[in-house]
Amino acid sequence: MSADLLNPAFTNEKAAIAHLEASRWPDGVNCPHCGSINVHRMGGKTQAGMFICNDCRDKFTARTGTIMERSHVPVHKWLLAIHLLNQGKNGASAHEIHRSLSITYKTAWFLCHRIREAMIDQKPTPMGGKGKSVQADETYYGNSSKRAKGYKKGHSHKQGVVALVEPKGRARVFHVKPATADSVRDILVRNVSRESELHTDESRLYVEVGKEFTAHKTVEHGWNQRGFYVGKDGQTTNAVENFFGNFKRGMKGTYRFCGEQHLQRYLTEFEFRHNNRSGLGVTDGERAAIALKGIEGKRLTYRISR
Picture 1 (cartoon, helix red, strand yellow):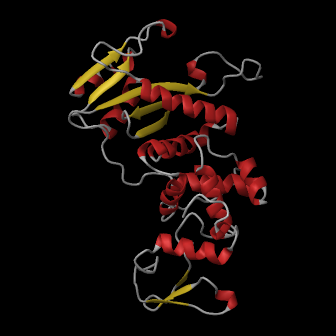
Picture 2 (spheres, helix red, strand yellow; picture 1 turned 45 degrees about the vertical axis):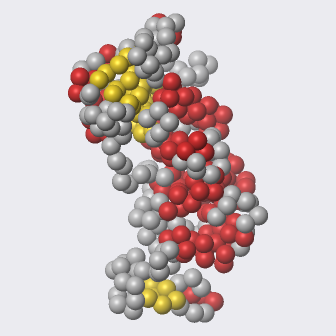
Picture 3 (cartoon, helix red, strand yellow; picture 1 turned 30 degrees about the horizontal axis):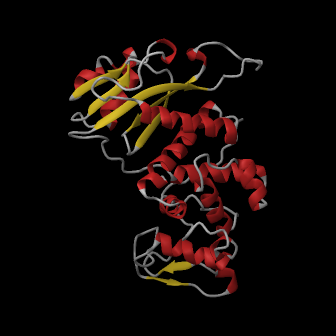
């Protein structure tokens, strides 16, 4: 589906359901309960879009077993929200979704978080590899306004973020608290091939773990970045710093605020768009289609704290 907002799937519920069914079952409908392909579509106005499995006798729709399950939001509004979150670098806030889709802010907020769940890569492969490099860096987010009542100076009062980026390739981002040599090592060895070159700044977080890779090359940024952006062997951390720049501009300009408990989901959203960006040949419509493919098997329930 293209990113054309005049597409019937964004305005017509019947067209939206047909698109969702084609996306989820390109090779034919199968039962999400038992996996059987021995199913048939039910008739009648009250059962529109429903199927029944002739083996387990359970009823289901294209929403069953996805982030859309038990949602009262029409499918065409789900599809439009997925496109709005994927049409640019900075995403779309829940307030924008709430106004554009004519739904409540609470519904829009929950809908956006469900879509971020769909953006999670369920089968990540090792980054880098023989003859390749991976850039690693950390940054700190939150508690940045000196005029805020609860402002406290120092990284210990902010949320740590560690990012791994392949130059002209993928990114993988993690919320950590705190960012220590041990937590950084755990992230690196779980996500990066040992045959890769590791490129970092001069932070001591990477000194020991760097010995576990083919090579560890650093860029001496110096105090307040009064050093170099490219090392003598061509090593750089520009790609990972560009990712952080996009993330911080998006959080400041679009989302404004993010609680600690939700930070990883926002990081996942920016990671997803980076890994499916136009620079890698992915259009806005294709990016939304990839996100739609990820809706299956990812339920997110709303729990109220007491």
